Length: 486
Ligand SMILES: [Zn+2]
Image (cartoon, rainbow, N blue to C red; front, side, top):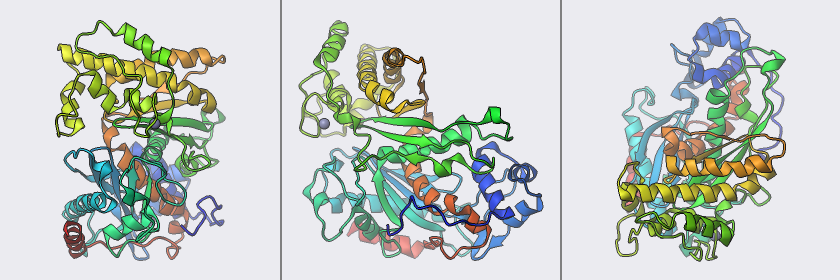
């Protein structure tokens, strides 16, 4: 990116239509009608009607009924790569994820070459775009999709030069600087000539999830305030999303305080905390004390069908005693006697039967293993909780089952005692949609950068500086698909 994302936006006059658009972002989850949106924006209702008309070469930006953004505001193709699956969809300006599609689980996909893995990504992306081209709510009258960018979340640290740093993608091709100098270039290349390293962006998966967490928090958890009464003012707060699956990591985001105008969303100034080298959140590689593991092993020694946690298990990074090696998918499989080394089947599939809550012996062993994992995670989080003074934590990922969250909840006593002030940390259930939080957040990151933060300019009709729609058509998608299969 040539531009500095932290540079202050040039002062732009906030027109009545710009205020309406900002109000739709802020109150979009509240199902408000035209009159209510106008009241929130502090403008007369006619401005909402005006915002529903075409602006420049954009079609109508707002829908009737509960006022929301139409797909004319733009769509982001969003992809997330996990240990065994790839998920993809299209994110709209309301933060909704359309045309959700997944690949069947593929064991060891993170060991594939860059070319092979990105071909899987391109095939899935083509599938999503083809679905969307048949969706009347997304496609334009001319048969194209108003996609303006693509985002891909990877389960690996991504530095500020858009490259992987000693990460989970283990094939040596991921370290090559040719033919593609950055992962953005590689991602753009597989999506075809409409995309560039600016419009195709690669990011860390937990950072992406933290963006979705903040978006939902300011719209549905801490609902936007309708008056400027000082009592309703929310200070800034820091929240964390922890992913527990094949690997373990976290994303941290500082949610902005309420703004001076009620119609300006706190989402705009919320900030992902990426750290000095953009490597924040790598908690999976935190060394865990042997005594903590021994204590859990003693307590669960009489649970039928459950092996002890192997303290000397090797982490994906090659070291011993790391959190990820003690609580991640491979550790869980080993404790439950799932012979992942003798079967070629994806670990996700082999573990699936154990992860459904039930009452058989194996279910009980699995529940106990997940509870133990939650307790170890809780211990590991004491440091981050104290260092960051967190307001809330959400756990997502394949192993984020109720038993694990329960174990984490128990371990929360450690934080409570550590906080001599008595300040508590909420454990927020991210809900049934949590599997899609990463692609949604990845798409929202670019939606925020290129649309949500530009609503003033759009309201003023200053469209020249916006990333334009790439007008994705069926022939384009067919070409993309053909290339991905070659
Ligand atoms: Zn490690």
